Length: 211
Image (tube, rainbow, N blue to C red; front, side, top):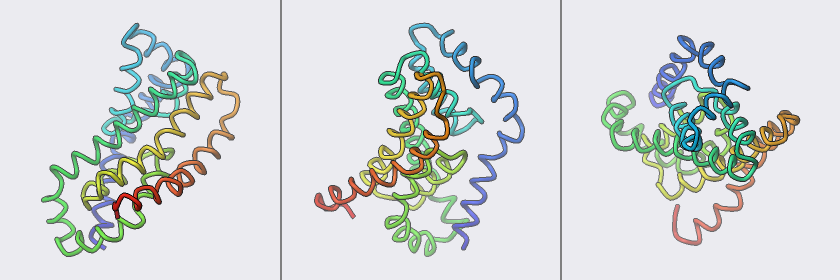
């Protein structure tokens, strides 16, 4: 129960920047504004895309318009790769920070026993959450942090994270490259593809002895 409270606290912390500055960031990084901002970095625009998506861990950056802008500027393949790398890097940053520095705080808030109990639970169901959460606002950050706090296997986390980051990155880059014509299709595919990919990857990890 206390771990759920910890998750709620994390969610509240991630919500705070949206409450304070969310509207401003939507104006700065949506549609043509995102395209202009990335283009303004010139040859460093690709790194700016990745940097914005990693900054979404701490700031209310609207990730999907940034990915669409990457597709519009760099095309489906390059824009999709940049978007997927940025999403993957954001998830890894949250996971590593919480795994390395949040353990003591989590132990005080949730207790060592509850952390241990949820470690097994998160090892079983956490990968599905990691893979499927990349589309949604706030949830990816919370899930990545919980994966770090419960010390999910790095190999399992990275595999599940890739299953979520790759399709989401390429789908929204594809929308940008196609002139943003099919947002509902992208939404549906972004929800369905990550769990399917994890379903395919999980047997490979088990064959290598990863729980």
